[in-house]
Length: 182
Image (cartoon, rainbow, N blue to C red; front, side):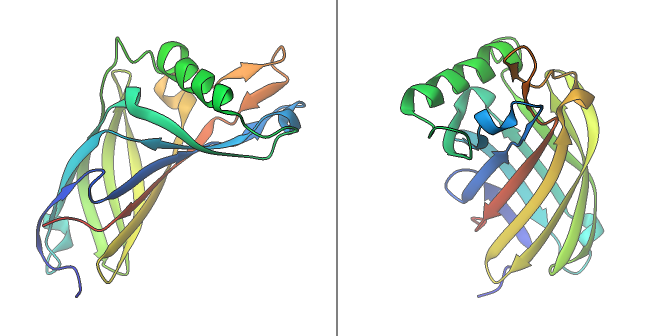
């Protein structure tokens, strides 16, 4: 059954919202490419297949709910203790989740077809709002989409270690894989 026009609830019950990080710097071999998943998030998509420009998407993400689900590369495998320390660093030092408990997205325009669409919008991270473009497609009942966020554009200093020789790449990929719930 194909996705139809209507209002859909978005969140962990309908799919996954993941962040993918990369590494940079001379010490990048020591680090890991991370896949981080948001455990708590919600949103709504009002989809009008006849007039995509009338569609609207909103979402709120709890950055304190980020969990490391995978770590690739690196000299040694990622351990459970590493995952705990990464999450703690993200919450306390990078995103400062106590002071900034919500990441928000609000669409400003939708264009294209179900096979290939774009959602222009405003993403607010740590009280800084910047434009972002989401590219997606609908196939059957699945909606997949991705966007790139350059952390420094939102005032985020990417994590670094080993006196700056190992750094998380400034660009982070955001991926959605959804079966929206109507």
